[in-house]
Image (tube, rainbow, N blue to C red):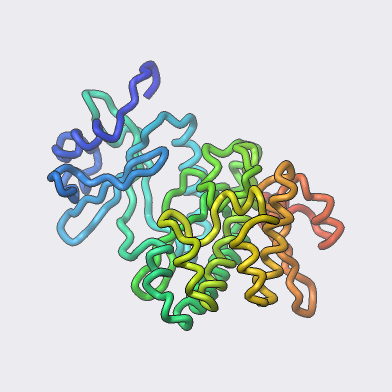
Length: 335
């Protein structure tokens, strides 16, 4: 909100949501009832930059994302993201959302929110824990995760914060992504990110300037490794999961040579895991080059698919290997 330094806290939002008919401008949210916590207050799902509230309105459920800080140009960013996603409606990974510049009234002043469809399912780490004794289900999840990464690349989309809390697994094991604040699409090229993602999934050298088509390569590969490894050795979960990760922690990326987890992963003797670990450790060794890097080269016959994730700083390597223009340029041309 311009002209004012005040910004609501989580407590402010909880207070406002106790009267949804007065708080919201959306008719669906005004008719909704916030899901309450044990104290009878609207229950927040807390993040670093926002609190999300679930509202029930008849047979429909909504998520109201209320921001805990003023993020410049968020309206324009969401407009560009929405415009791009409209060109890829076939993708089933995204939920319907609407950015509302004056979506909620707090202490007599209007503030923005994002209204989204509520997604039924559980977070990625919860789904994995529930299926540790079902390696067949984890293999299915691994394939679907791989398909998701491929589809994002081919659609010129980078989520920006791939981590367990932003991946919802539906009862049929379909995947949905939530939280689009840090998403990259071609029309945002040249801007900086508002965030750098969950530290247990991101290259420790990533900064807000690392905002390009390749920002998902590192985190996406980290998740692939974890799913693949747990499908083979479930004891890794008890050893390395801390409730706010899957397997990896930031320290593993800062000191990969001394990481017990990386040593255990290599000891599995799986070729695919070793190949992807090589990519992760190489990227960690060169943090100034960005958070992505080239995806691990596939050993299959024929030409590898060009990763639509190559950071600009590695453009020369990309052109040398694939003999093509940068994927961002291709995206601008509509290819």
